[in-house]
Length: 151
Length: 368
Image 1 (tube, one colour):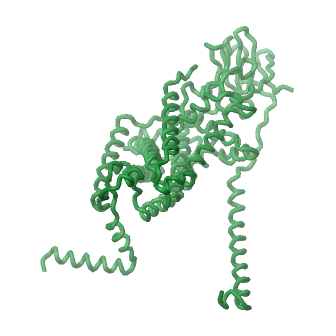
Image 2 (tube, rainbow over the protein chains, first blue to last red; image 1 turned 90 degrees about the horizontal axis):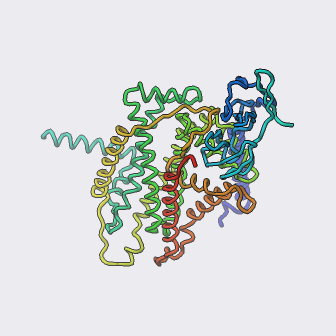
Image 3 (cartoon, one colour; image 1 turned 90 degrees about the vertical axis):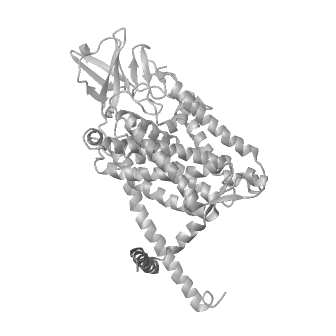
């Protein structure tokens, strides 16, 4: 070691280096913090629908068919069973979030992405989906269909 | 003085003037001294350069695409449609970009497996291996982000599934999903995010890493496989300039011809515009290089040992990636020139797994 890092001059140099180092670190942090916050998307108020009136009536959906409708800003599936009963479920697969469809040949709900199967109560009956589809309450009032989130 | 000698002396004076100011003449000298070993595995040395050439094709065609592409959910699909139908040679530029991307990933995988099986990662080339692995990851990131940009149905669902995967990260999963998508769902916000990553962040990072990778290859020279080293005998080599470079050039021109032919005969498709309120179409598939992972996720049951099957699969792939990244540090025998059957079998195993699962993915009946 020489006198540059020991003795009074050395300790002053160390102090200045420490100041420079911490200021540099502080500057890096003061840049990184806003950049990180900037990259996190702001929360947008979601149209958290608890009830929707569909744009089509009970007569527009034949037995053994299904239609996709907007439940808030999420897709949902309205199925009329072969017996004529209306069922509404979330159309977002619980596996990896694809949009499911009603398969007439199978008589139940199917996800094309990873071959997941659900019955008309939303239960995951085959394939990789780990949980059932959320189900909604369907009411027919005259020529209108109203879907509400179950209690 | 005759005319040629006037030109020559003018050229010499201009070069000297430039050398005084820029001083990069040393690089030329280094390049002229570089040699490439000749042995029965020399062919594999061309794969890295081929990948670099295809990357340059990607940069050039990508810049051209930027002149017409509009990154918004309302306009992206229409701008690509316009590019394909109205812009002169628009179909060519986009098809070249799509095909070169596939070929680049392919040559990158071949490069990766040749380095792995010839054990070119031996010390002191560990950092070359790690930077190469990072480049492989970034190339897959290029593929994943670029796939969404035309905003068509296939891309939309591939992105929904692909981003959903980060959910398996413990605790921070939902947060990471939101950061990646720019919101809770795949939307226009995801598109601008992927656009920024695809055209700015990734190119800048990849160019920097390629520079490091090439510097390291330059510094350590080409690795001679241990099997060739053990044979002994006289070492043969060729000069990089012009012998190797001219052979490289033959490969690059052939690749360009192949690209042009593929773009002309099988142009890139566009399909239907993405619609978040339409079911995923039957037979939906990711890009071929993600197929083996996609197919694995299809086979996994809903739950394995109390965990979601998908989480087990994704964590499994993550661990396998880390293992491959650490091979140069694990394969201690290779450093001392000993034959190491285990790592050869690991390499062959990974290759076989990827090929079999990819074939199964394409052979599977999409509606079953």
